[in-house]
Length: 114
Ligand SMILES: [Zn+2]
Image (cartoon, rainbow, N blue to C red; front, side, top):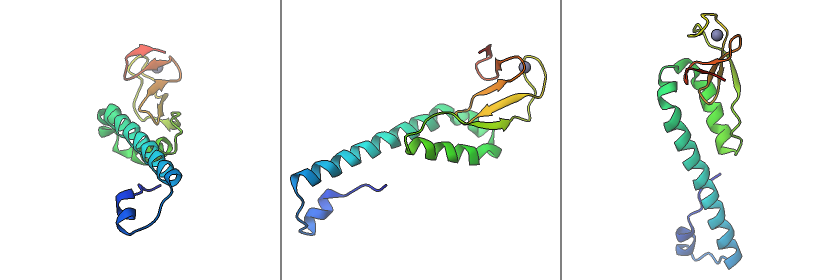
């Protein structure tokens, strides 16, 4: 996906129909909305990911999913941390930064049962 610079096309004397300009403009708006969503997502989970550099590949994949319009959190595997509630090493990590113990269902970040 790329932004289409309509002004540049006009400079090059390209003739665009009104329908084409509307279509290109709508594509730009749609792309900008996806980018805004991705940026908001990064800001929301930035602190969480800063402490988890080893999960950056999962993070990158999730960012791509957002840009493709698929924002469902994905299971990334077990965390190497113990559950802050029950102490067992069964904390499951998700691509949206959520960490939930599969044994006691305790959300490690919100610090509450889910
Ligand atoms: Zn637990």
